[in-house]
Image 1 (cartoon, rainbow, N blue to C red):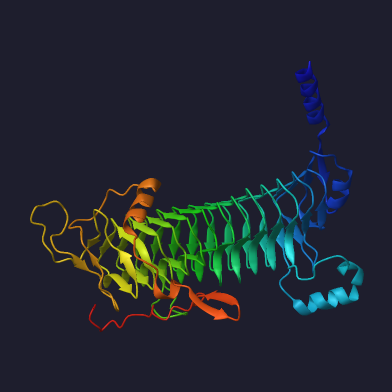
Image 2: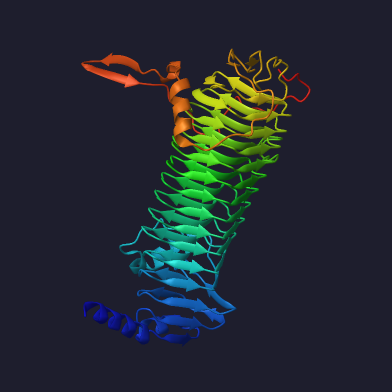
Length: 471
């Protein structure tokens, strides 16, 4: 009987839902609608509106909206809202105009933060779905704060300062969207968790195509990052995965930085990453920077970059396995770090296949790497060179003791096996600048260490002199 009662209520609810036709004044239709209703909006210029109940609002071809200074085109305050099929013209950053606006409208400033950007769509609710919508020219195309289960699907964000800005959002999904010509970021996600970016096209942003900062458990899958300064940047982000992305013609294709730990970067293609307008001939395929540790860099392809793969400035206990680096200036460059394990990779036809500067890393487990310039022999035919391979570089005395004589094709992404290899082979002690300095100040013991710099200050990664010998 209880089941029948619930079924009756569900059927009653579905019968009560209705479809409402709306013209320019969508707000009136929203005010009169019931939860679950569908509002169909006609073509032409549409007035701005706020949604305070779970509704589906669907624009028809030619439904155009204009945001205003400090007034989004669409403001969503209710859970369960669906927005489909609008074209929104946003308002760019104008600090003077914002100041004048609030001076002339003091009531509008009451109780509000005045540092918020001009947003085309503002989301302050959960379970919001936005689809088939175009946003152009806003300071923030979409801004969402504390919004769980936010979905963006087939949304175009063009010529915005930031395409989408997410703060403290959880379990969101951004799929099949286009971000282009953004001044700062295509996507800026901070303090988020379980955000999935899949199948997006992120092009020509002046800073990062996608910045994921202070976040965890995010997935970046099958996206294209092209012609950005930084294609994808993980910044203080942990336990995330970056899989099967295409990154090309960026200054940095994939950048993992500032204590971004326990991430998996696998099966990505990083090619022709070079931005000569920034530094002639310089561009990085996949880079680990600034104490980013315990990451797995697995089975990526890096070709046509200045550095195909690199790790720099205090990165440790990372595993590089099964990667293919070809036709780069450096296949892999390790700079000022230690205890990274590098094995089962293929380095061929690079100007310098592998390079290590002021570092102490491990270049083999039971197998080493394949280097196209290896000159040693394999008398017993076991696929391992009889002579070690010397890793060139400033102050480098490191060797690969089991260099491969043929390319390695057997890499498998097995987390426990990789972790065991790191635990077994990464046994060097702390670097001198990682050892705490103790001093007595009065009755207090002060512990300090040398501070590290933030990117992009990497003085040792300079373009090669093409006329110089390889090493």
